[in-house]
Image (tube, rainbow, N blue to C red):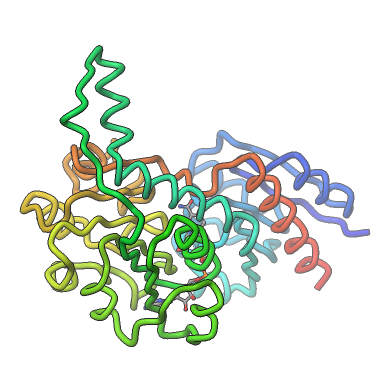
Amino acid sequence: MLSGKVLVPEKLDDDGVALLERAGLQVACRYDLSEEQLCAALGEYDALIVRSGTKVTRDLLERASPARLRVIGRAGVGVDNIDLAAASERGIVVVNAPTGNCVAAAEHTVAMLMALARNIAAADASMKNDQWNRNKFMGVSLVDKTLGVCGFGRIGREVARRCRGLGMRVVAYDPYCAAEVTKSVGAELCRSLDELLHASDFITVHMPLTESTKNMIDRNTLSKCKDGVRILNVARGGIIDEDALLEALESGKVAGAALDVFVQEPPNKFPTSASGRLAKHSKVVATPHLGASTVEAQLDVAIEVAEAVVTALRG
Ligand code: NAD
């Protein structure tokens, strides 16, 4: 049996909490902590489990100086809200839940793709506004269109598989992916990002946010896309340069975008920023970082991260 205390400042499914408790850990679910309160509390805990809302920055770790903290668990895949270098300097292990929400994120991407192609959100909003306007919301078909998947990891592949089922041609760009992997799901591997940009009617990004992927879709890359391309981001805000996307939407180069993630989240707190303007843009379908938000994914992720935290604490 383990002993120790785990702080959970963001909602974690009860089954994940129960798993931690069965391992002998004392779990404190404190969903209303301010950053200052989190900082003050952190020193009492052996493990911290966060989702994407808590920013575990170097500054937080320096101010909290959490002598007991041995593990940070991320209930999800992206660890860009955790300063990995600062954690590692303090001997804190960071673990995540890489598989639990892949299907949920892929399904959300497909939902966004269809909403974008058929103007679902705008048409629904007009109905709620007592309108019946069949001409305004003419859509485009997906069948025989080319979808460019940037980043062919777990989610990119799930998206590709589903979109092949919709009759789309799927091309992929991922410098770390073998052609056999793309072939296995009926997609074609591009030799360069430019090749994907030239070929695609829709482009969806599924990479982590890193120095190499930040602003990967910018003015330069957008200029190489087909006129009227549609762009999706259900990965991380910042992979697409938001100012460049706004310009391209205004000029018509990009016909529409579907965004689940933003540089500034929540965008409504930054109304004049590019994130705030994109979320309200008439050519954008926006959702509030819902990619992993299914009942099933939250359960799977909670179990996966709880198991990883227990394993890490056992050393
Ligand atoms: P993954 O690690 O399985 O796949 C990422 C892929 O990106 C890898 O195959 C990698 O080779 C590729 N890649 C890295 N750098 C690249 C580059 N410069 N160009 C092209 N490809 C590159 O990750 P995943 O589980 O598929 O997750 C993908 C993204 O989705 C992550 O950013 C994750 O945080 C995000 N995500 C978002 C939500 C949401 O709620 N919106 C939910 C789950 C995951």
